[in-house]
Image (tube, rainbow, N blue to C red; front, side, top):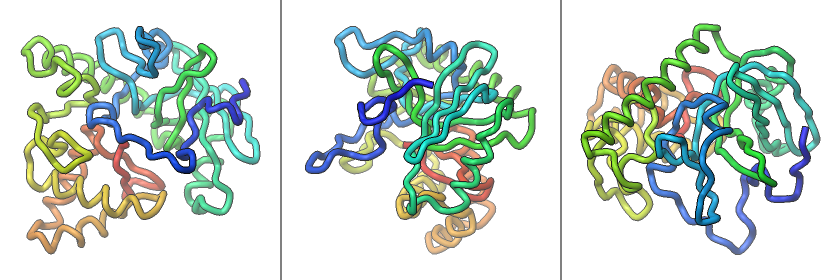
Length: 270
């Protein structure tokens, strides 16, 4: 395991006191399913910045990988895991906030601390001292080995979807398609306040309402929002439980949200 403590490596999840962290545009917050080889062979920023781009041009920020635990090291402040997926090996690090993490989150993290376990990781791609790694925001055991196959299909579909968007001209340029995840259907910019510059629900009203609800309620804790809470929140806007559940399922498949402590809790992918 490499040591990155107190160096700014692996990306601290906090923001230095007195500084305001600029919010990234929506493209850079979209979840992209990838293989580890894609991360390793991605191009660095030629201008010396922090951006890392896939060979097809998409900028990496939030990614999802699926792989097998080859080694792990737990310290008082962080957990580092080496994960291999058949295409390469990468280090994944997650920070532990003693006293702040709920027991469910801590238990999910602890379950991953076993060699040869298959896990799913969602996090940000970082680079320190010339080496790529992932700063995890969510890591958990796979519920079934079918998730391995499904993830590879997601990777292939994501690539194909982006290529078709680029060929059609709707996915060219940083403001439109450089960070799209699985099957993102939104294609036109739309102003949604100072911090978001794109219609995240693909032009679907209930999808947009669900996104807004999950972002609002999910910011209040680390475990995400229970599906029943989302249903109750959107019932006042006239949406039925079936409509809300379909929207949440769609947004999860598109990579806009992800499940946290179980399949009924969701968090916005940012």
